[in-house]
Image 1 (cartoon, rainbow, N blue to C red):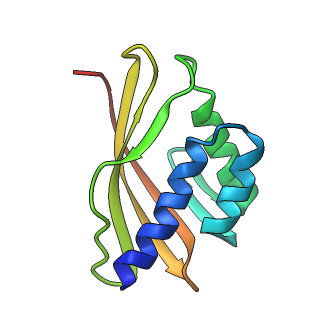
Image 2: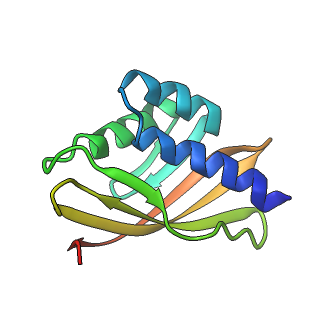
Length: 124
């Protein structure tokens, strides 16, 4: 049951990266995150949905073009933290970024995100 709750929040979070329009990003993030969410990302620690939205928008505006974020593993929730793997691909076989996120849930919403990005690779 915990894994299903975590998977729903994670999939809603990932859908923000793939929103058809920038205006939907905030709405999707508000459905997945607590208002005081903490993001531990490549550039350090930031707080709040607005900070996560800036992070998502930066990825959406990748120089190689609008990409697609996909969860590429099951959600594993051994304790209070859930983890999953993801892949971000850009059009025309552009750069591919892979990684693992670890998230903490509070009241069925993500209140902390730790991003572990991997190597940027061309599509195989």
